[in-house]
Image (cartoon, rainbow, N blue to C red; front, side, top):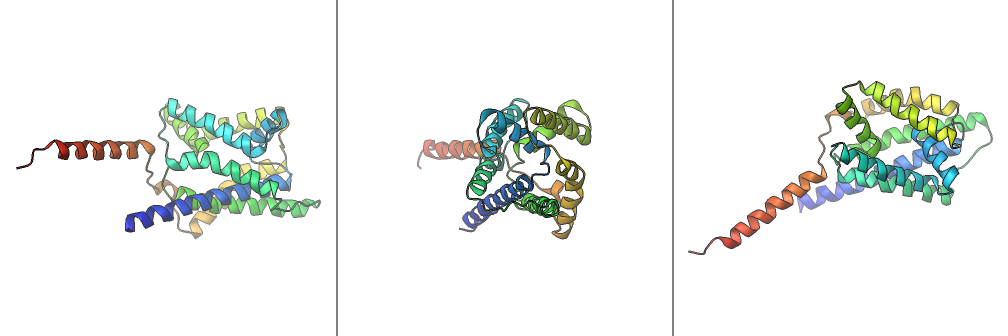
Length: 230
C-alpha cells in the first residue's frame, strides 16, 4: 500500500508539474513580446501547418523522442508524459482563455516574468519525480555525450537552430526571447535554491528499468512453477 501511495503521489506531482509548465508557457505566449526558443519553432510550425501550438509541441516532441532513442538516450515515463501533456495543457488553456491578454507592454512584460517563474516551479515538480527528462532535455544530454562538447555549446546550437527555423516560418521572435535566453537560468536557479532542489542530484528511473524488472519477475514466476513439489 505504501508503494502504491508513493507511485500515486509521483503521478499527481508529475501531472501537476506538467500542467504548470503548460500554464507558464501560455503566459509567455499571451505576453506576445517574444517566446522561448522552442516555442518560436512551435509557433512557426503552427503558422505553416494550421495546427495548434500545443499540437506542434506534441508532434515535435514525439519526433525528438525517437531521435533520442536512436542516439541511445534512455527514456522515462515522465519523458512520454512531458511530450503529450504539456502540449495538451497548452491547447486547453488557450482554448478556454484562462490566461488574459493585455495591450500594455509593461503588463505583458510582467506576464512574461510570471510565466518564467511558473515554468521554474514546474521543473521542480515534474523533474523531481525522477521519471526521465523531457524530450528536448534528453536531446541535449545525448548530443553532449556523443559530441564531447560543452552543454552550453550544444544547448546554444540547438536553440539557435530552433529559433532560426521557427522565425523563418513565422514564429514570434522578440525581446521576450532574449529575456528568457539570459533570464531563465538565474530565475530558475533562485527558485531551486529557495526550494532546496538539486536538479543534478535527481536519480531517474527509465522505461528499460521497468522492462528489466518485469522480465525478472516473469522469469522468477516461471521458475517457481517449474520447480517440482517435494
